[in-house]
Image 1 (tube, protein in one colour):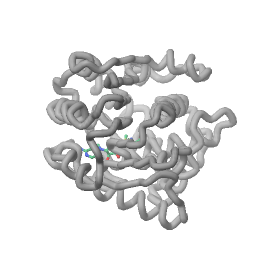
Image 2 (cartoon, rainbow, N blue to C red):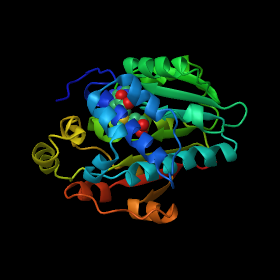
Image 3 (cartoon, rainbow, N blue to C red):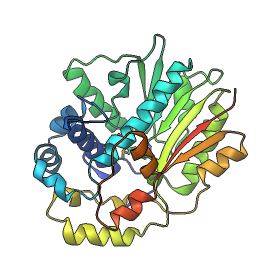
Length: 297
Ligand SMILES: C[S@@+](CC[C@H](N)C(=O)[O-])C[C@H]1O[C@@H](n2cnc3c(N)ncnc32)[C@H](O)[C@@H]1O
């Protein structure tokens, strides 16, 4: 269960979800036709030394029982990779990765000269990430700056303190974040992004439909996945489904141009047919909307 101001490390509560998606990226990275090559993902999982996550990483057979398959993570990673590549090609030199978790884009993408990448997440998550990357001798390919702050708090002040410049265009990502925020915090997040975004800024985020039956998902996890690592993290107890503004509608009202892409269109775009996944996960997965928004120059 979530509480106001709750905190976590990489093997607890919402922190564990960052480890879980890193495990999915590591598995996807091993596929012959991988849509993401994240050499750091497996390092994070190994360093966290959680038996279930290690099993996810090493047991190929297990993925046949995965509720979502790994296609999901490949498509999602590439979608956000493309966001950053497109923005960099358009001349944007400031990126903010909201809820960065174990996202290693600052290390794995070929950023242009002068690129500054801000990573926002809770302090213990960023601390774990730094320790693993430092021990591996990894070097960022951009000017990477950590902003250890809770996204329900006054994160713009912390971001500006690290050097963020609201007068130049920014590319923002909120990947795998929104359902972990209460409705009011999500609405405040977009209001703050809009306020901090100069003309020419872009953003992308993903979220599934709040109408998805979480109780049904929890039952399935408890019944069928309990003895597998997929049963370890009870996502449903970490999510908020209270009222919130629709980001696409809200941003459109603010004058941003928005585009929504459903998973099947992403699959077509990246030539990766989606395999059937278990109900009710299929309902959640199919309801995901990948949103891109641009503030006109
Ligand atoms: C599913 S993970 C996604 C991580 C990363 N974006 C990725 O896709 O690999 C969710 C992340 O959101 C972060 N997060 C959730 N709520 C947060 C909050 N209120 N403040 C800061 N970080 C938060 C968690 O710490 C975690 O790293």
